[in-house]
Image (cartoon, rainbow, N blue to C red; front, side):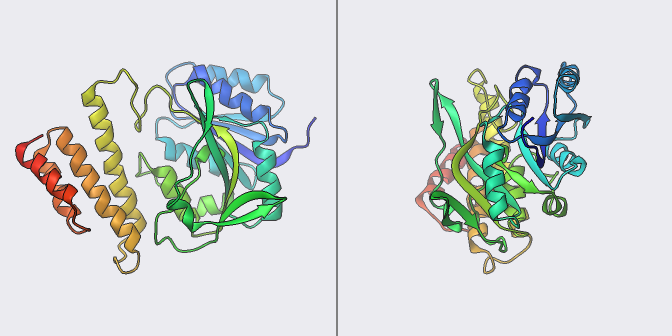
Length: 318
């Protein structure tokens, strides 16, 4: 049997029996296998439980199925981390798959930087039957410094206070130190953006290291709280946009944590921008009074021509 690494893999799932097996197999088929796999089921009503038990019966790697009874993805991730037997926890969403050397690469980096709080990598996704590597947002990656391991480019963000937004690797590429994750768990108030919040706050407890190689193939399922399917109606798409921007506000407010604009100006600018975006999304739904409320909040930030345009839309009601 291959050398086993002291890592627990946590797969979160909900009503996706048709694709869960793909995520699971990508964990089992690692070049450097994990020691334990936890399948955290957030109250599925399909045959996820039966499928999971079949996977357990046929796996050479210890696998445990835990039903979380519809408490949300943040609760499921926290449950997985709490129940992990090992000091490092690798996360995976049920609609993503790991590259087969994902754990091997992360472990190699961890051995050279054992004190980091979180390790991650790049992602790719299928576009027209071709795998395309996702871009790194230039502005958000500026918080990281570039370094090399064996002539391979990596990025590191040294442990520091959260005073501005920074790039967060996709959680399906991440391996987190369990002690850090227990000290700063997933925020269960956030139904969206909880992944960003988690990484931002973990970065206050230790360094974050990002590998420039692709570690996971990711892709949204047909629909979710954060995305819509092509067949979704216009009203459904508008509602999803409003939900996203609402949680964008909550993310910024929690990151600011009652600190002044002088202490964290970039986070305050993010909050004002989030107010504006939410006002725009609300007027698309025809919610004029709510839109105006968030529009006035956005005026605490930098005024632009877009504010005049949005105010016009609010006044005429579309």
